[in-house]
Length: 188
Image (cartoon, rainbow, N blue to C red; front, side, top):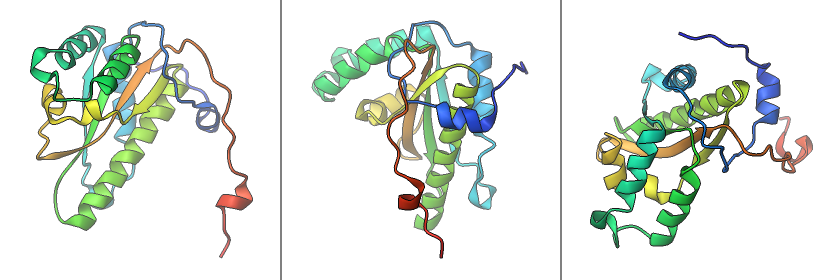
């Protein structure tokens, strides 16, 4: 496992931004594996570890773009959503598709989804700490059953959570306004 200098966790949390524009530089498999390893440190109810990840690198992104633009999917997906997705992912260095295993009753499924979302947040913070930009995409193209299957998932057995775009950012956006603490914290 490769180790690298990371920034303080508090700084990574405070400076993380949604990045939608990347340079096209490759994100190595070892970098992606380290980020996913850190994602898997998320808390999870009943220790179900419900998260599942499927990653693609730059050549994989080119194959994904060709797949979503293929004749088999024309008319099946919203052409505008496909066009937006294709334009934006072209510069990504890697993409990690995230899903949660569907198991148990409603309560467990909610808990598992929540745990998987915590894993995504770990991944986003770890990406920031290692100098990468990230974007948690919920574009419906990634949730389409054909795309989930393309990533090796089973839409009947896994709930799509999102696609995490990773790469070297072309810009560092300013912090968006946040609600003041007195609007979001209530002492009981």
